[in-house]
Length: 242
Figure 1 (cartoon, rainbow, N blue to C red):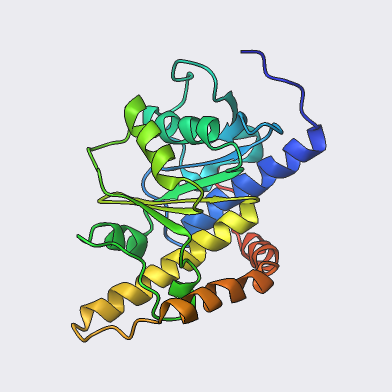
Figure 2: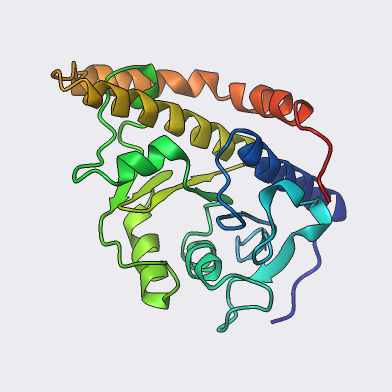
């Protein structure tokens, strides 16, 4: 398909944000060899998107390295990992409102995903942040590289902003790179709290539905934290490794 013309400044900013998100992920210890993928829609209809190339380490990704792809194509593009196309290509095609999609195997989120019941139980501010915002897919079948698996994941996430992928990891969607990364950051902290609390073998002090919802709603006023936090993290990045 022919890619439509974009606004250069808008795409350039998005490339810079997404490239820094990869490097921040590595800085926080959440990268995994040369795997995992982040993407961001460029076109208004959400079909054309940026994605990291096959097997490039997160800490080496520069804005110009990101591939511009069209979700409507029928085959895996050159230099794209099949699992990346399965997940991100399908999600951008099926869920165009998901402007930014971050998939990672961060340690505590992955540990949570490996529990028989990986529910993000609301027991504090951070866990309650994701109350009624989290979807679950517990049909793990190996590396996600089949078309039907991408379709299943798109169906599973629905209108939620977090998808816990059973026996696998987590996928976050958001309106901006900063917003999505902030949710990835807080989901990892929430998973850490929940895993540590469960490891005590003592009963959890689970918030009531009303308190959990009130806490989740209360986070909306703090959305501006994402931009400030992302700006700090990108300032803390070491020089780009080429």
